Image 1: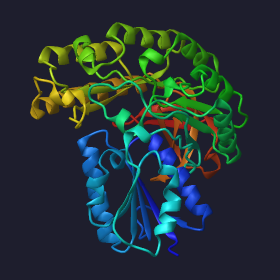
Image 2: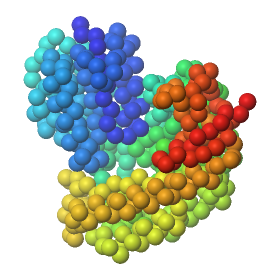
Image 3: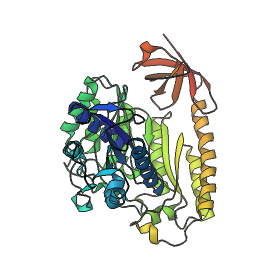
Image 4: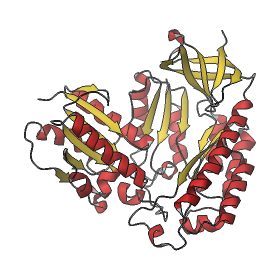
Length: 432
């Protein structure tokens, strides 16, 4: 039986947690996990389909892996596999295409196929069957784990295929998630990033509340830090913000998708809040956590976005002054309402708008880091070494580099920020 398996994860933190869980199953079955760049007998791709670029990246990866490992079994799962299984199956080298619903069966399907060959096999890629919950957490990072607590989304925003690729919002009980957190703690990881498709919508399946999950996780011994990967502004309640402010474990770090600073465009996108509501949530965070790192997602070039709409977004972001802006040019996805919307924005215009927001982001991020100069922070150091330095993050997500000291890896150290580099990495000094 073939024994070398490589994993290739595209897209979100949720995919990383799932790939890591699949990898543990292969390792438990006697397979050797090798680096993505190594030759392998089995190549597993966990795909993304948030944009056309993500689809293209997956296709190119499949072809590259097949050229490098022509006899390897290539198994593709994830959102692109869910939405366009036949398109993937038609690519030379693909042996298995598996739906998100049956992702947990991937190991079994691969083992069954080893030594048999044959035509590409497509398994259960129908949206209406997306009801399973594949429990997952990552374990390949020594210091930090991504813990999946929720899957699917009921929102059906006008530009998004996630509802079709991931199904309806669902979750497993708090008690099961807490047990997974205990396993993470037992493995020596210090930080957990709570992740999902629409994380704050946790509880649809079990009738529980997201705030109750946070409280339960807070009581897990051995975990020193928690971060919420992303939460919709309409689900970010006062109760959640106040709890994060009061808990020493929950870090002052929030990722709150905006998508547009124009109420007209938010309405066309079918988002569930206004700019006033969004600004209120950010103000609430800052009233209790003035040092909070706030990351924002923005889509530019959505159909109907005029120069005036974009300028409104720009000025709204400038006023909010987040620590970071994740900028995405609008990507038309087949089957979404946005496909049929009039007043498409030319690609050249969208590109120019992206550039302007990138410049704004660089300035705002530098300003945020500048406020850390001379101050002391607790930093959790990671194992990677570059040029004699090690890296870690403060609680409020400022990246810090210090002289490499192996004894400090996976420990929380008090660091004084001494300077900022052009890319906005901060340079720190560990205090004894």
